[in-house]
Length: 209
Image 1 (cartoon, rainbow, N blue to C red):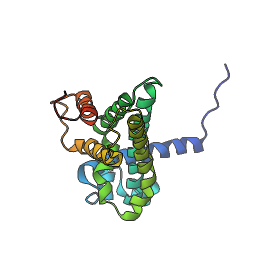
Image 2 (image 1 turned 90 degrees about the horizontal axis):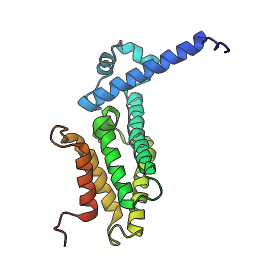
Image 3 (image 1 turned 90 degrees about the vertical axis):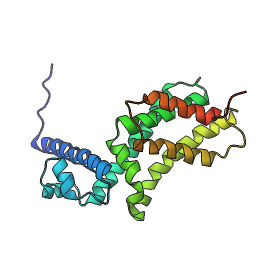
């Protein structure tokens, strides 16, 4: 067996820098989630990361830059998890099953793996318009993905033909994202909540028959 070449000093330094950068982002996501973007100071992030505040500037220029990366990671985690869950169903799944998988995956990432995702959805409204605009393309891509799922369900007759899907999409995302404010894992399993949301979306709340 050929011996693997030893890492160079430069490679080790790059690896350490990447690990430190992620440590800062992990700490920042926790602080932003609990304190909010406006109230968070760089010293809060440094304390959470167990670093000196001045050391943050070796990796980031500002609190805004840190937050922008937290935002990107947060929505990307949800989007990736949703696509993976939907694709795992296979081509024979119903459109209702696909939307149900989207709901459960979104809730799971938001509520069980949530520092980045919770920081994202709790703080997006607090940031300046310019930062929102830079972050919008990925959020819009996720919204478009959900719109496509709903349109496919409607085209297949699994949703009312006259349903306003733009309104449905906004209400669904609002309900999912608001769950970070009220969800209590001790009261009800997440999978049951996801199933109930799916039933409300497709069957409504009126008595059947």
